[in-house]
View (spheres, rainbow, N blue to C red):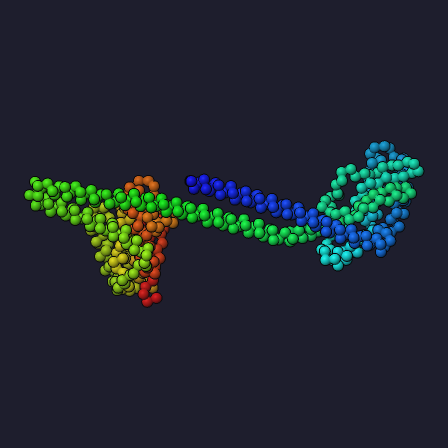
Length: 454
Ligand code: ADP
């Protein structure tokens, strides 16, 4: 199956898991909400029942006297008012007066708070009254003032409990009301109760997410590795084919009798075979080197190297070998010391790899600027005027078999091992390599190696 299919499938599974977990949390919350209401509601009702037994009644008589007083007053006012808005506003006023009387006179809150605390409940709550029905009575006349047909609780008390409901009939009124209690910490208490469920749900999601990310990452790495391997095999086949076919053509030419008489030609062709053979050996050695490194650490053979002489000799040699490419190498030195401990053979390869890359990945005449300084550290900087690299490519240049660029420069020969080798050698010397590059503006590799005495 294709990786894209796996990614889509896993993402869908992850989203489903997320939805299921959220649903579970919401169901648990609802259940806990019910349990809370039952437990706290029961406790509050019990407390108020006790309050009533101790205080003989929920409200003092003054409340009912006031109810009657205002009822009698409003019966006449309402009857005298014009039907419609005037009467409605009077009724509304009366309802508010009754609510004020209830709120002003009958608050068993202190008792309730005490009771809840003793019973081990959270005692923080707000309380209030809600009138569900109010009518005025005048002998056999009944004036309806208010009747709650919606069953909705007043704003601010939407989630409260009805702890007590009462119906009273006086001389001039009939009222039905509820005593509402709203526990302020309800949500916090419920969430605290759900802590284990919440933690487990979050933990499951986080673990699955981590596994998902790691799997995706590994899959992408595997895919990149397999792409690189394919690239490497293609490049290697290409690299091996050229010398092999040259050798094949040269040896068949040699077997031609007429050719064998011309000693000069024989010498030239055998020289060619020799050169190609050397090239093949170098290629195979390089591949073998890499496989040896995988099993063992590189062992350096360090020795005292006169840095100036070493650099000048290698630069001259490289220029000589590349005289056809118009390579120009300049070097700027800043040396506090003459000698440094290095593995000169490996370091030669490092320089050659960097320089041949500067030549390979350059569209015009390669110009290489070297800066070498030696003090507490050995610094070797190689700046070229090549095609440069994008940020994304720079991240991978030291990877084994990695070859950047998709365009024309893929046709440049290479196995993607040069910079891998450079990095390994520099690291073995205890040093570091840095790259600064901009597409079209060239690249600068900076190697720093601590000197032995440090
Ligand atoms: P190779 O040259 O065999 O492909 P290297 O490991 O030497 O492998 O380099 C890896 C890749 O980095 C190259 O394929 C090339 O795309 C890019 N690269 C290396 N050096 C340079 C440079 N000086 N300028 C531009 N690109 C470079």
